Each structure stands twice: as structure tokens, then as C-alpha cells.
Image (cartoon, rainbow, N blue to C red; front, side, top):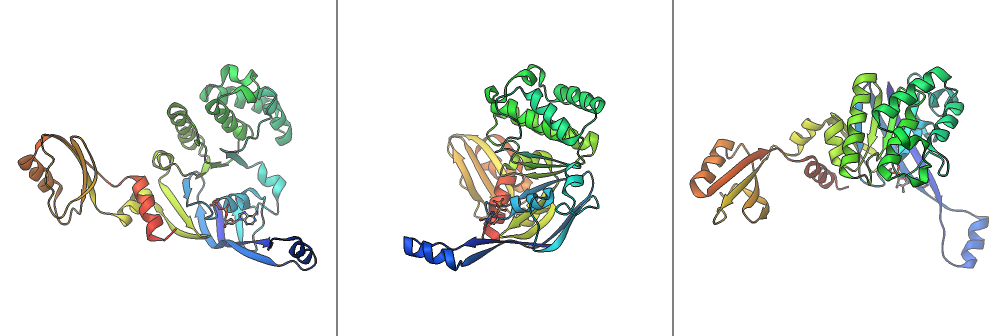
Amino acid sequence: MIEFTEVSKIYRVAKRQAGMKNAVKSFFSRQYNTVHALQNVSFSIRDGEMVGYIGPNGAGKSTTIKIMCGVLTPESGTCMINGRVPYKERVAHVRDIGVVFGQRSQLWWDVPVIDSFDLIRDIYRVDEKTYRKNVSELADLLDLGEILQTPVRTLSLGQRMRCEIAASLLHNPKVLFLDEPTIGLDAVSKLAVRKFIRELNEKKGTTIVLTTHDMQDIEALTERVLLIGRGRILLDGKLDDLKKHISERKTMVIQYQGNPPILMKEMTQTESSQGRMKVSFDPGEISVSGAIAYFAANTELLDVSVADISTEEMVAELYKEYRL
Ligand code: ADP
């Protein structure tokens, strides 16, 4: 269980003005700006849940993760994870958590991956039997094979990311923090990483907090989404409910031959290319069957499909709504 209660975090940044004189002046009397990175943030995440933590740059996501990892202490409020306060009981706490930062590596660059794993085993004092079992299981599931004997610096990004994920799980953590785990990966590697994360959550019940700008990660992995903006939690709910909150509108993609259709006045065109058009409308104004009938009567229709608003569109709308 992860519980945030009214957590606030402030950074103090020394004011600097240009020029030597000001540098000397500020050395003797420092002035500070304060940044309210988190303001009364409260949420709870149950054991075994997989939650997407989203928000624009500077919203406060990393600060939240750092508090959950025990790296930062909040000014006020409390964070409890599995009955412990991370920043007060760091040593015990880190045994319970795994962390993967897509942009940073926890593996040693010049040595074979397995040597890094051995070091991690020693740091976390994982017993030999558990370690062997985990390495062999993870190597199997993440298709590590010969990669384990290869120095990290020669791996592709996709291979390295699979190793990073394995490294974070060698000590059987109950909670895993993933920060942009698919950033920069090619399509095949993305799918492999997502599949693994889903199975880890389903089979082992690992609690997962996923920070990402990739809405396909969110779509593929999480049911629940927390939206943070300017240090405050703005929304907390199921992805489907968020979509409904943003828009009940339906999106219809039609493919046609000949002239493009003239739209009904209640319809908005959102995309258009040769022989293909995407329109949106409010199903309260036009029924889906009514729209299909309209196009069938007025266009040489080849194909039609109906979709809800995409997750990307939803997030863009949310950012607009909350002026983020
Ligand atoms: P995110 O991860 O969502 O991009 P962060 O948690 O990194 O957001 O940042 C939240 C706010 O705190 C931003 O305004 C950022 O500039 C500020 N901030 C983050 N780290 C520091 C720091 N070490 N010193 C001063 N300000 C910081």
C-alpha cells in the first residue's frame, strides 16, 4: 500500500543576478526563490495495482517518485509505503522497491551485464538460491540469453532496457517505479517491455507506478491514471472514465471513393486525406446509426469505423482544460 497524505515539497533556489558585483553581494546575503513542487498531494495505491502517473514537464512527477524512493523528504504531510516512511527507513525500504529510469542506467557501463547483476545481488544481500532462480527466470522472460555476458556499452537501447528492468527485480521488490521505461525504444522492443510489465503485475502482483509521456504505454498497461499539474493532483480515476469526462463525442473514420462527403452541420472534421476522413460528433445530436446512414446515402462509402477519443487526444484536452 502506498499512501500520500497532504504531501508538500518546496525547493529553494538561490537567486542569481549577472555580474561580478552581484555575485559577491549574493555570497554574503543569499536570496532565495521558492518552488512549490508538490502542494498537498494525497492519493493511495493498493497492493497489486498498476497506476499511470502523468502530467506535463515540471508537474512534480519526479519529485513524487523521489519521495517514494526515500531520496527526498517532504516539508509537510506523510508518505507511507508498506507501513514504512521511505525517507526515515531508507535501508529497509529500498529492499521493497525497484526503480527503472528510462534515461539513466543503474548498470556499470564497461563490464558484462551479469557482473552488474552480481554487484546488485551483493548490495541487496540476495541469497544465492533466490538470485540464481531470479536471473534464470528473468533471462528467460526478457530474452536476455547471451546479452548477459556482453558489456553494457555495446548493447542496443532495447537490450539495455530489458537488462535494466531485470536488474531492478533481482531482489523481488513488492513495488516497482518505472519512469519512461519505453523512451526511445523501437516498436518491437516497446511491445516486449509492455508485455513483460503486464505479466509481472498479473502473475506476481507487483505494485507498479508508471510515469510516462507515451500514451500507448498508459493505454496498454494502466486502468487507473493520476494526473498531476503544477504540483497538485488534478484527476484520479479510471482511464475510461477520464475519456468520458473529456468527451462523449464519437469519432468516425470513413473511407470513400469519388468526391468527399459534405458533412452534417453537427459534425466536425478532425482529419482528412485522399479517400479518408475522420469526423467527430456528439451522439446526443446524431446517433451512430444515423451518421452511418447519412454517409451511405451521400457518399460512395468503402469502409466505416467508430472509435472513442484516443488517449493522446484525451490528455491533450485535459492539459488544455487545466491550462497546463
Ligand atoms: P516532472 O518530473 O513532472 O517534470 P519535477 O518533479 O522534476 O517535475 O519538478 C517539479 C518542479 O520542481 C518544477 O518546477 C522543477 O523546476 C522544480 N524542481 C525540481 N527539482 C528541483 C531542484 N532540485 N531544485 C529546484 N527546483 C526543482
